[in-house]
Length: 460
Image 1: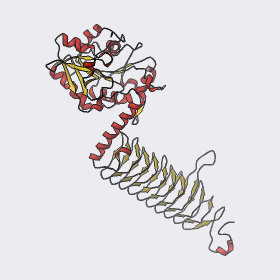
Image 2 (image 1 turned 135 degrees about the vertical axis):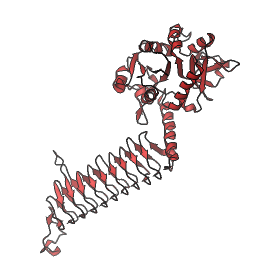
Image 3 (image 1 turned 60 degrees about the vertical axis):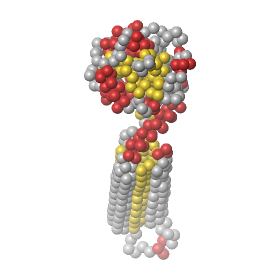
């Protein structure tokens, strides 16, 4: 079936009180418009037509690029007028025309496919997506005759009391037969009150001419939500969060408190993983099976293996291999990697560094541009001094090394396998394997060195 999609997105968004176009405001990490654009691209191979306003055209074009075509609506004279602006791009196309909006992020692809299928099967002039809810929210009312056939849609502002009592509402989503839409669209007349041209008037026009007008009632009222204010945006965010969380719980993930668990649309979770309250999983994050994340944890663009633990910590653009753990109050920055079985304790921070298999990093420590070997121990308060004011330098700590508390490692520097540093050492030169370095600046202990020789716990 040939299908064209038009996305109406020319509103001025005055109620958002923002310099950013409403349809580009983020909702769960994606612009509002992306939800509708993704639907359109899933339903047809033809680029949709987005109707834009002159104030927002440049930003929307810059964002959507060549994935869409564009029609400009300079005067805001209603939905019918908006469709007239799209007509020159689509009049030669047959089949059907689906009308969507850039501010309805809760619509499901399955619903629209059912709408299109019903339009095809009934051979209707128009198929309308309707919703039933106790709060009409200013939506137009669906008026049916005694045989339950749709006869008209009456806008809320123009509806008399008996029509306002109707609770079957118009979502504004339509699937038109193209050979009905394009000849009849120019016949629309301006409304008496606002002087605007409404697509809803085509329903009465079709019914009066004996054409079939079909209706599909959506079961989930949230699908009909249009975003007009930031309060609406919060409602939509809660609905999306519930959908995502429910999907993961049904897939075998435990969410201790779904109301305070925030999972992005591109996150992947393994079965048997437990997510504690106030956890935010963002971006392209992948978490394996049997992990425990949170509470009070942020994970963004990270990859975690199986059986990992992240407690009250922040992870960004980092990797945790199987059975590694962090926290509480740890911070993995870009390029950080905890290898299998590695442990990073309280108030630790890593950036562009690797903590090797089985290695342990105690509390109040910082590793920057460092490579730590297997089973090494990083004592509390250890700092890699990786920046000289102009360039970053690397620190290498080899397998089995023991770094004493409050050690300063002034990069570039290497601590050999099995070597040790004394507490408070300032290491400015390489430490050979299986040796001990102590003091300020640190020196390697010789066989003749004794604690009595120093007299001040290794300080020189």
